[in-house]
Length: 120
Image 1: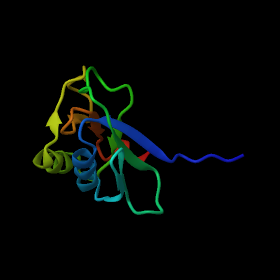
Image 2: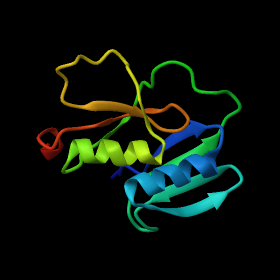
Image 3: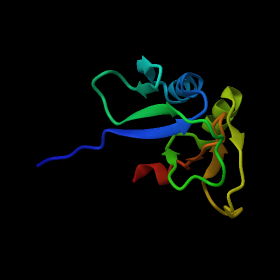
């Protein structure tokens, strides 16, 4: 038996809006859209993808799972993501950490790593 990493599912209040935000942030596209889910991926044949599904409640507390982004230029990428609507958040990281924690428009935390960290 084989298995592959297929998707990460993100609960959210507005799947279409959040999927479009992440697609823009990652340079991906919306590859599937229905009333109960929206999927963002590189294309129809490339996985993993991000699946956005509706929930009634707003996010509360720190994410137990998050996405790490590994750009060539951390500070330039943080600036770009902030221009798209990401916000800096404090989840208890230390000043000497080399990554920056941001949140998407619905408050889901993710990290932007330094170039050195992205090489793993």
